[in-house]
Image (cartoon, rainbow, N blue to C red; front, side):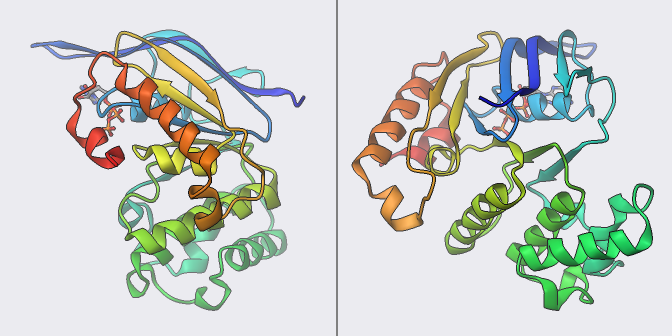
Length: 269
Ligand SMILES: Nc1ncnc2c1ncn2[C@@H]1O[C@H](COP(=O)(O)OP(=O)(O)OP(=O)(O)O)[C@@H](O)[C@H]1O
């Protein structure tokens, strides 16, 4: 068994304003080992994005702690990359694809190594030929590939992804899921992936974590013991995939706010 990379302990977050307090997370305990692919699902508003932002050091917790690679997270850790849903806002429109991917490396690696890392990452996402293009010249799916290339060029210990594929069409989404699975194998990354989509979580992960609503913590952790090699048609139509999907779905439904419309719409048969 590999070593633990991320430990989240008794984590809590309350957003307070003059009028009200929102308990977004309470008593979250979660550990992720090196090289694992873990997804987090749960009803809309249960705090998935908040969890990711705290792990990324972008938002302070109000209770508990996050430890990454043995160090307590109090600011954005150097060895972590984040890919958000809104690729359009995460790329600089006035910089080329190559420059966008190179950006986080500028202060860390010398020029020659930087070039090699960027070229490798762009090839890995199938965009070697688009290095000189600008983001606005690319489709949404291609822009998200650039965001992924930027993350992997950095060789993060932990890759955080927040609904990264929910803004693209179904075909592109499947392609991006398969690309991510390939990259995860190729670079032996550790991935913490937030999604609304239970099928996507089961398809990609080794473990699915079901978050409850703000005050109920982690509801379940379901190991996904599908074969390592997965494909959109074969895997998703297998009986075992159906069983795992049903298991996750049942746990999500059992959380205190089962009627959350957005989630239920997406998983309804
Ligand atoms: N900056 C903020 N100020 C106040 N409340 C916030 C803030 N950010 C999030 N919240 C609240 O915290 C709760 C959790 O929000 P969060 O976005 O983390 O949930 P989520 O599970 O990612 O939701 P979704 O699935 O809809 O994206 C929600 O009630 C939300 O309204």
